[in-house]
Amino acid sequence: MMTRSFAFVTDPHLDDAFTRGNQVPAREDLLLLLQEIAGKGIREVVIGGDIGEPSSHTFLFDALKAYTPEYKIILGNFDKLEDVRQHYDPPVMVDGTMCYSEDRDGFRYIFLDSSSEVLSDAQLQWLEQALKTAGKVILFVHHPIVEIPVWLDGLQPFRGREKIKALLLDHRHDVHIYCGHLHITDQRQEQNIRQTVTPATSAQFIKEATEAVVDLSYFGYSIITITGDTVTTEIVRWERNR
Image (cartoon, rainbow, N blue to C red; front, top):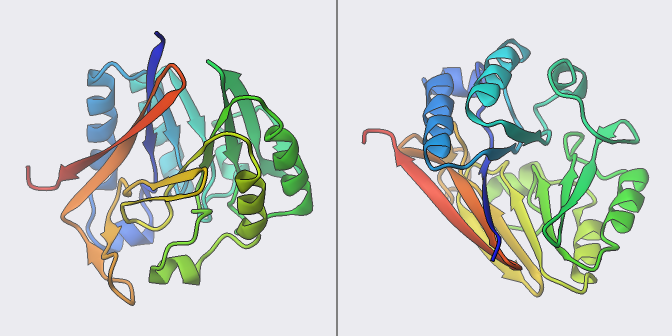
């Protein structure tokens, strides 16, 4: 039976005001994770957005080429397409956004651009077509689709996500969503949707807080393993002082 694993790494915020202001060694942390992922024999990585300042992009893509021969990029709300396209050529553009999909091993992998924080009609139409598949779906998107009762989800939501959720709920098979944005760890299910919010590569927010309270104690990533038609998810945490 076929088994394949890949990693989801999100929100490194390289060189930006968030990591610099909190004295997070963002470049070093990202390299640690990429080295660990490669050491586990995982050759594929999806970067989940909020990469960081354009000055960091050469560093990021050099590191990806060194440790992960196969990688995909999705954009977050701090990313600009024109900056990323200098290093990464997206397979498909939809209404000026980086949306694309691929079929592998009986699954459809969908990469959805939420960098504008709003879903356009063209993106929705594209997604509706992309969901017309007999297979299970794995959706990568920076913002959560299923609502989470935390302060940041209300402050910076992906507008139009209720339309996405309606399409996903209509899908005949399971849909696995992998996202970031919130700098927390969260897994929840709503009918056929299974959503994993992966901890940031940079720093976290205290999940229960009602305002921005930074948690510097750990950072992490997710490992997604496909065995036949089964999807399992492992959230890996790195304690900062280990």
